[in-house]
Image (cartoon, rainbow, N blue to C red; front, side, top):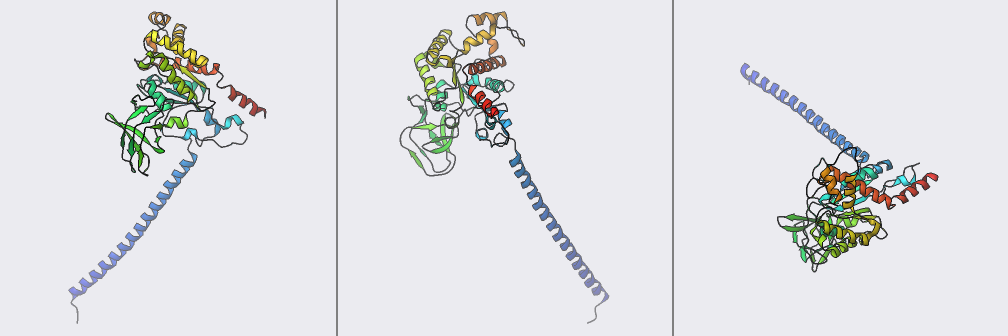
Length: 383
């Protein structure tokens, strides 16, 4: 059958359109392949960058030994890098192959700071001693709260059920003396992660209730009787050079009971660890503070630091960078720390943190806490 010119033209256009679509499809397939290959290459490149960063990161766990002398004032948190052991470096003195013993400062608001612009006394210690210092403190914490985190008078949890999944379980915390313990969780302060009956988890607060949430799913655990809480600080910080300092507490009026709490915390340090200082209160009734200071000095001897008295003595000295008023100096002579050393009722000012840090550092040096490190370094260099 003979096709008309119109039909011939239509068939020709159809063929041309088909060829054009095929060409476009081939181009699109090529483009898709290029995009796919590019995405794979980008993914490989990103992976290499991540691997390189992981290998070359300069946190303390991967640093060369010199970086172990890096000044740090760390809040106790979930990072374990500073607890890692460095590797041996050829030609490095033996004493440089490990981090100097860290310092842990257990305390309340006075160990923290009122604002980010103020360096805590723990930070002053880090700079003065040139070593890692852990700030293990919580706002408005009590002496018993500190003792619970440190483990001297352990936190105790009453019977409850730990679910098999990560559902928070309500708990009631007491201490071993049966006193209800309320924790301020504004800072971790050596608490989490903790363990209850061998189950690791986190203690938290929702409203006016406390909860325990396990870290990973496991077997349902029934806590049938009152059990102790093993805190993070108990696992990691009991071999450190240690400062115990609670600036004010209602408990201080009971001198005998207060001394027993401090003694329990000292005794809870690792066996053989006698590198600690106990610093007295800085806020409260003067007669109450003086009675406690006398009792603490009798119990701990040179390991007790009468920080109130030393801050008053500091106020009477001439200083290059600041001048106290006559009223401040007069107050110091009566045994009351001048207000210039405080930012508020619960915090030191920058003047107070600096003076406290330097007093703590001098006390540690006078007790010979660092003498063995000097001996190790001298011996290594002689070899």
